Amino acid sequence: MRTAEKLLNEQIVSQIREFFIQLDQPVEVLFFGKKTGCDYCDDTVQLLREVTEISDKLSLQELDIEDDAVLAQQYNVDKTPGIVIARKDGDQIVDYGIRFAGIPSGHEFTSLIQDILLVSSRNSGLDEETRSFIKDLKQPVFLQVFVTPT
Image 1 (tube, one colour):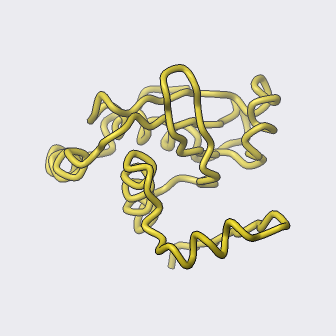
Image 2 (cartoon, helix red, strand yellow; image 1 turned 180 degrees about the vertical axis):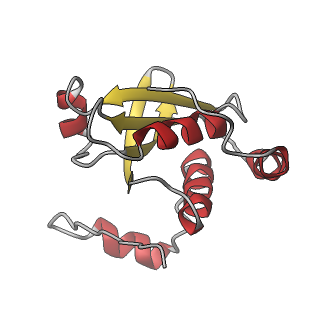
């Protein structure tokens, strides 16, 4: 993958750094790309490198969806670029089910930063009633949110 010029200017990095003061626990970002046929993989991994370099509580794994097919299947990643935001406890990665398919640019960039903060806090922000409802679910729920640029 190529190394691109910086995608985030100093003003944006400074703003993100202010948000990342709130980071409590380590977060692992897993990037899944592929060598050919992925239009936004290079830009996405560059963006993730720049974001994860802002705080020592963040780390980035760069993976290939084909070469690392077992991990891609483990994390249910079937699209590239694919991103997993997970909890890091020592050497263990704990999956919270947060995924991005495609480059998180525009409004999705804010969602990426917010998801990193949520995972770091280890608190979803859901009230007890909602947590209780979710805990009582007997079947897996597959929820996807699609966003298209306009």
